[in-house]
Image (cartoon, rainbow, N blue to C red):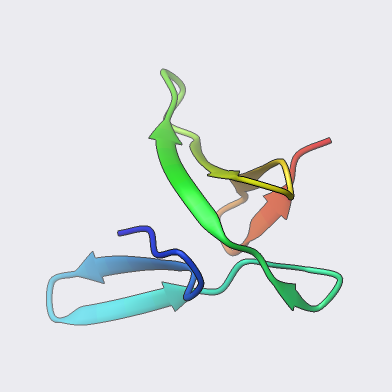
Length: 62
């Protein structure tokens, strides 16, 4: 689940994991989530570009 300012939440059976999304130690506001044909998870923002999940965290895509 994507939130505006609380990052991404992942439900794993009994556990819920939160992945915060930050750039330069500032919270990034999220507007969309997309899973591509290769299975990569992407996040879209209004002002900070795109972020890609690397298996542990979301990294800004340049």
